[in-house]
Image (cartoon, chains in turn blue, yellow):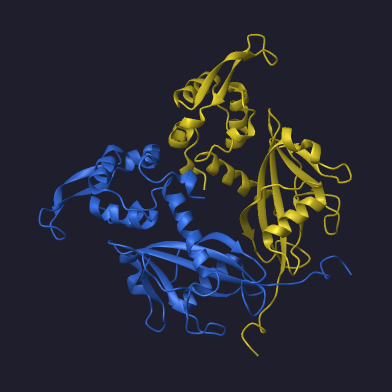
Length: 234
Length: 234
């Protein structure tokens, strides 16, 4: 008998936190849980890891089975493991998260499932510790967005500053003064003003901008000047 | 019979990656593995999660049992879970890491254990996927150090620029030109020059500096100007 055989084996689940931006606001993808306990309540997309699949492959399979989404880049976030987190039996949950441009993925969401997008500003209470998982994913996103142009990747090639402000407000759970936000984002030197205006969303119209891709790699930290201090985030 | 009872349960281990700075160089804490397979080879501090302990408590217990260290702040890093990572039986490993000021903790390392500090520049080959775990912890550290003053917390209150350079070189696995490093770190405005010199480590002497604590919270991103682009790190 070796030291392995004496050990307790545990159930291991995956839960997926999927955020999306639809051009106006940040959303979160949820499903109605299909099994007891808490059957019918809103939940992250979750399931058990199978004996011969890696954690990442389990995450991809579960997300696909519950929503129809495939070929999504998933990133491991955190493993939740307090003994009492699942009332039926101790279950670890390895969480994965992703951030989608909804313009690209909306069509893929299959009707045969009960997956639904909710505004990140207001979504139903979730089962177990899933609200805590969502908060961890939001914190990770704030952190990443302070060093990487991940949020700009969610915007169309040409976007307006009000659109960018709405995205930043949803991600940083903050509200920025319009004039200040405008001034500070321009002062980063990361944006290229275009000649055309968006006249659909306001009478006066708002100029379109593009991200200055040559510049952002070296100067992206300019973004830190006006977002909440990332030292407060983790 | 519910959906839980049909599932496979898995072994879950913890592995701890402990870095330390001794004033001159970065080190990593390793132990000689006490069980088969790979008994006697160098390894991270690892063990199995017990039925009624949280992951974090398991990490603290295991680290204490193998090294004598206690009251260490441990941060969860990543869960390694490919099916074949342990040759005896599939075992997930939840990794935790920490960064210690060795001046404070050296005394605690008990002689009854075979734990040993190795320079991070040159340490023995580790069992299983432990080298990959160390690399993940190094990447996390580079990332954190670009937004947080974690490295300054390892230095004594008064430190010299050569000392700071050695720390940054070990963390970023880079070598910086002495004159450039000097100029750029001064230009961040994060350091306060002291009147005294350290005359122990060179004939000419090197001025002591302190971190400008009032300034670093708001201007810490100045550090991004001269470290490798964090977009390349993750």
